[in-house]
Length: 318
Image (cartoon, rainbow, N blue to C red; front, side, top):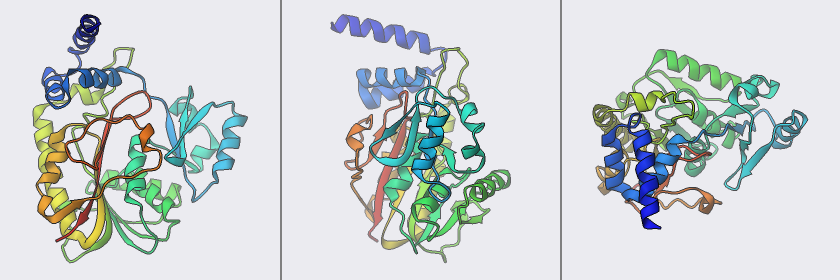
């Protein structure tokens, strides 16, 4: 049996080596071991299902279900969010042709990226900062969760991406102030009750090689230099976030990477200032999880439904 497993794994790795950098496979094996790395590589290969979130600022869940059924679109739901839908066969292009999409009643978004705002548990009447907000999926989700009653600041340094963010906010009827600035340079005069830092990363969790052999751009451009640059940016952003967060309050740090260098090791750099708030999400036992080096944090295994993703909830203690 062990011989068969090893043989299948060697075939899988040899098929993917031309597309997945060998150094990445080595990093994954060092962190997760051979068996878990094989599962990750399999997740890189499968075609991901189309997923979306209902925008409750504009629509009721029952209304969206009715439209899906009228159009014979088969779907599944998840235990951890009533607003999240997984489509069995429909593509993103098919969904974009629906009026509910054009009217901003739904938002195409990966399941994994819906988790950080839910885990943040944003509150009405609070000052909330989304530090790397474009294109706006998580910002609009925060606005939806808080019924547009939170004071949301959405930060985006790139002017073109900031315009895309503003477009999505308007389309989703979500209220937020867009700050066109590098979040690392926000004046420490500001302070926030809650912060979401979905940090720029290498994208090691989002690699997706389709069966048609078209390489994912992330896999093509994946380099050690990219990881190093991401680590520098993540460290600076998280240190700034802690400066801006009020003492005793909580924030979420997340990336679409599954590498400890961009996740747990970044958190260790501010460990004296924070406490890890264990993530306790309804239905999280159904999530495809990878082991993490810090208890209470969450790392998602990439598969047919989910992108690889890391989420940590932290409390500022000093």
